[in-house]
Length: 327
Image (cartoon, rainbow, N blue to C red):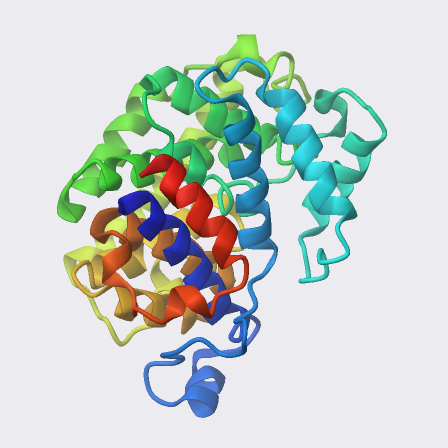
């Protein structure tokens, strides 16, 4: 039950990190004790916009799978539904709010997208793209990038979303965690100048890019730099050190990917400790922890999480539905 493990792991990390975001590591440990939060709080344990938008992507994919061609209309509808939902009160990102408001007016997505934003809101929600069965690599790649493009049009948001989806997919398919950084680096090099113009249209145009290939290469290069930082950190791992110091605070897409991977790869055989480490960070703790939880759950499966957590997490019924769909 690895799809279930990934989706619930994402939500668990989100809930743990929601209580620690904007705090220093010292402040987190003063409140929760050494190692940070170890259990869900509340009945239900509340999540943030990270899980809410992951579910929006999941709903859209469920509407269109196995054929992703009408995914633009489905994503638009579910993103707008999230934007209009009274429960959208969990400190959502400004980029998502602005872009979804523009999508709601009927603007073409290329006009609604915030092209300069590479915030982690693009890849915090992409895990379902990694869980869908039966897609070829190109389909998975373009859907991962496209769901980002509707709100976050920066090339780094696109590239980081693709890498995040593939990390989930590969782990769910049995890749050993130690092989993941090399696989991601190889993917980045292979795709560095691949611009999916049939999906992304003229998103590349702007003052900073001269060609579509130049545009997308800038995103892959930023992801490669954070993978360099990840390799350096893992060469001499220090589980007690705040991972944000090595791989970034996670407010932007490539750092959220890098630091979530950092937390996962420090404790690849201890999923709950992955979440605790990810939530006990000085940066965007909920987004880091939700991605780390998606990775750990994709690798270990649903059974790796504490048995009672699934009954205590917000949106548990819907998470279970999509888990069953993709398990």
